[in-house]
Length: 216
Image (cartoon, rainbow, N blue to C red):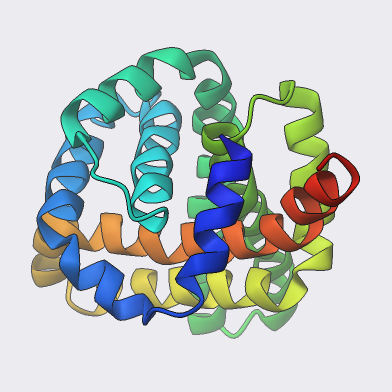
């Protein structure tokens, strides 16, 4: 699976990123709705995030994606690993992100800086761990370890992913009614699609390419 993903990502370098996104808008709308519905119990948000990442991986590979079947199958298969995201990473990501804006508005800059560092850690782990779970069959401990490594090695893309997420949070706080409505329809899937692309490019460079260079 990882080899096919690597090969298709290499091919994708010759195609505009936005073309791939716009060509799959209907798939992204469907996976967005599935993600929202499956995240309603809150504790299932982690498995839902992995399922969303799996669909995004297939789209990045330019494959025809049976969205409904792929999402539900991935949701069920990685439910246990997804609980780690639900219980640890997603709350860390959301609470620290909101803390950045809260403490900035109150002028507590050192607390804002602390929340920003925590947010960067949580955002980076989500950016790399969810795609690795959905695209590889490595043991969970190795996926988690590799996510920490990619967070550092791909520092530029880690920061870019965090900035994109903070911008989305800021827009939701600025225009809550409109942005929440968009989140229910398409915005969360587009957000996941972009962060998945960032994470997979780093994984390709530091995990997939070196592995298949040594194991042709």
